[in-house]
Image: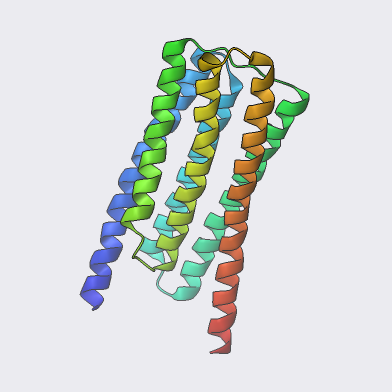
Length: 209
């Protein structure tokens, strides 16, 4: 049983490590496309991606370094805090679009490139959730929650890219993108809060035992 647990942990480390590299490459792609189109929104999405990669790396570090449940809980909470902070900042920036509209004007090829990059990230994140759905290790659970939050935020940039060339009603684009950004940022924040509440309950139950 110990050997099987070690094998599952090692598998999770390799899968998540590879996913982090893929997400980092996707984030760099978003940043490059945002800079090339002089649009801030893809850059903000790229920074969120980097934040999620950081949170996953924290969880990975916990899997590798922690020698007790208490240490794992600390890494779990740190990942949750990073998720909450990143998501709140993303939601705040999205809300800003209601007051300071920013209409990204992308060439069709750039917009399609952004959509392709975000769909690639969405696929990576959903795949990570599916692959690790039966792994009940605390820090692997944290990684699954981070993947889910990242997938929600991916939808915002995908909508932004598609609307920029598929819809001629440019005046409503900032409000539509801002609304979805606030909703998805809020949902991701709730996921982070759920992580913190969950691990605090587990800690409390362990203390009683």
